[in-house]
Length: 239
Image 1 (cartoon, helix red, strand yellow):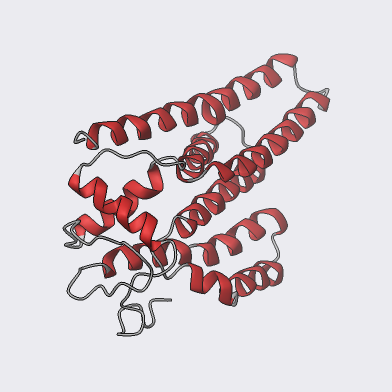
Image 2 (cartoon, rainbow, N blue to C red):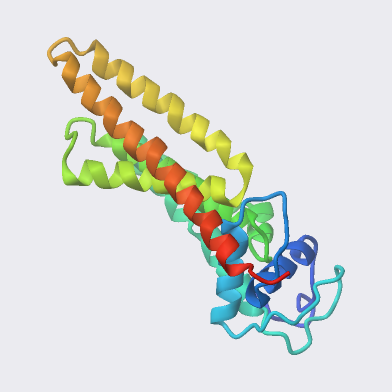
C-alpha cells in the first residue's frame, strides 16, 4: 500500500489534500481556524507530519502543486498504514461473529482487493483514519458480543471501554461516524433485550448491564470527544 507514495508522479498535492494538508500545517503553526469536521483526524495528520519532520510551511493551495523538498511522505504513510488496518480488522470482525475461517478470510480478501479503497488510503485524507476507527468500533462490538457468557470480567470491561473509545474517535474524525454509533446502539439494545428475556437472571443483572453500557458507550465517548476539542483549542492559540 506504500507503493509509489513518493515517486515523482505522485509527489504533488492531490484532491482533498489541499484541505487536510493545509489544516495539518495550521495545527503545526498553531494558527486558529474553523472547519466543518471535528478535530481528531486533522490533529493526527498534523502529529504524523510533525513527528516525521514536516514544518508546516507548504501552502497546499491547489491540486497539482509540487511538494519539491517538503517532508510530506510521513503524513501519507500514516494515512496508508491506518487504512491498511481495515484488512485484519475485517478478518477479526467476521471471525468473532461467525467463527468461520473461510468467511473471515474472504472478507479480508475483499477489503484487500478493493482498488478504490487502496487508492483512497494513499493520500492525506480523513477517510483512512475514519475507516480505521469505524472498524475498531465494530470489532469492539463483536468482541463484547462474543463475551456475553463472561460479563463483568476484566476482558469484558476492556472491550466495552475499547468500543466506547473507538466510537469517540470515529465521531471525532467525521460526523458520518454517527452511523456506526447507531449500529452499536442497535446491537446494544438487542443484547439488553436478550438479557431481559433470560428469566434465570434477576432484573438487577439487567440493570448492571445497562449501567455498564451507559458508562462505557455514552459517558466515556462524550468525555473523550470533549477532550479532543480541549486539545484542539489549546493547540490553536494564534489568530
